[in-house]
Image (cartoon, rainbow, N blue to C red; front, side):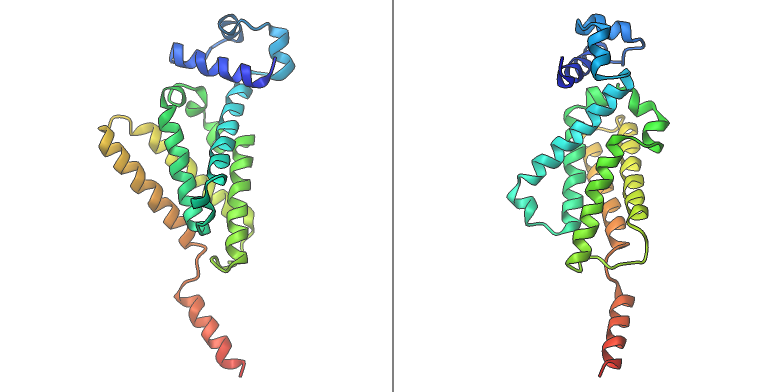
Length: 209
């Protein structure tokens, strides 16, 4: 049995039961999968969930990569487009995401997993490309710390998305759109050249005559 089928059955279980399976046996009965077939692909249900997150991220990034409009964006706009696209994806699948166990798990937000690794890989490329075209300024900080900064903002947005379901739909959309935009402005402003950088460049140029 393919991993994709197991992920599909897990998604369907949560959509039907509105909660994750508490025991593997319950899921296997629902999915009509043998324990042996399951363990050929996954060690645990938690691993299935993480794989759903990772493949969702890959799908969102793949969709963006196929867009000619996205390819014309600078790195700042690509980061913002990603955030909007990701949370649009979550809204489309909110019944699943609001009921999966990962959203209740501190280890998902603060630990290490393949989803985070793929997210950081995306951000690292944004930063690298931005520095290559001088959209961003080298601050003397390792890329690792800037990637950690981005993921911290991402999971802050994720947590607030989860907690703002009580808002009316329009107010929720306005709140999230503003939150995503402001968080990305905050992140990319920390990389962008500022007036101090411009002043230093001017002084260097004056002294080079």
